[in-house]
Length: 387
Image 1 (cartoon, rainbow, N blue to C red):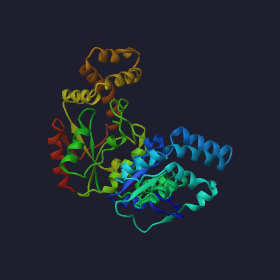
Image 2 (image 1 turned 45 degrees about the horizontal axis):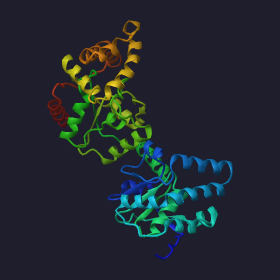
Image 3 (image 1 turned 90 degrees about the horizontal axis):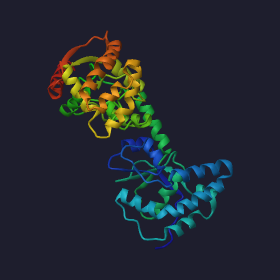
Image 4 (image 1 turned 180 degrees about the horizontal axis):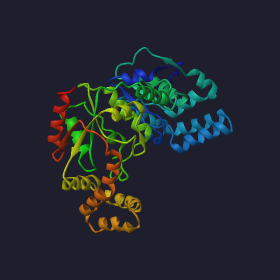
């Protein structure tokens, strides 16, 4: 293979183009921890550097010089380049040509950071190429521009950068959430254990596109035990998921939420969404105590690992209930008396909290949620007659 030629211009798409794009692949060149905190929808993580390498480069840049940091980055990239190109190939259905990639990288970067950076200028594109492969880093800097130029020179001509990188995408998400214009909202409310989430998800099954499941997006049930059996998401990831859902629109011109406080776990609901939820028509769900116990047990002990997680959290509630209850809740769990534990939690902890915060709320209608599918059908019909 002939030596690959460095390109002076690196085609770059805007965040708006990427958000509106269809049939594209997004490859996140940031570290695994950066990707885990939040990423573009559907993005595949193919890190150029690991967390340690990125931290080292940043330290050298600040404390010594850009040239010293570039030299370290060059060595790390040289060791990584073959694997990086192969992983990009797998993520984009592209077969890279056989070449001595380490030698090509050394040749490319031999002029130092000044010559390399100036040779790789971003150039806005009018539209995305067919089956585009969008590669990005934190802010669309040298990390992503160099990789885009390199794989394009190897033959992946549908590769483009993301102007401004993840930072530009994040800004677009914030702006989108701040400008959301909600349709009329309906909010499922009721005591803990009535199965609000179950009914919400049945409504979505019956009427696709009607609901926004904030708890699923947050990875949290919005209570002190709400993380048991789940994986809570960061604020950024919560907002990314929420923005993706809101961009899909609402085909029936209504939106259905489950009643929440302003925070779902540690995730704060954005202002426009919170106003829609807080001001929506409240629909009360009711169920027998036996049914509520059943729902609570299924929620908290659906997975074997959940028992250990629940055991860690219960002492907090014991302290809230008072000295009389120290060790009592954990003892019930350890003894396999889950239904007694659930009944006690409802009676002594959850119900008093709910009645304190929701006692004066008025409801537009009330539904028995013992059968989630039946309740969902009734609610969907009720909303349709008023939408």
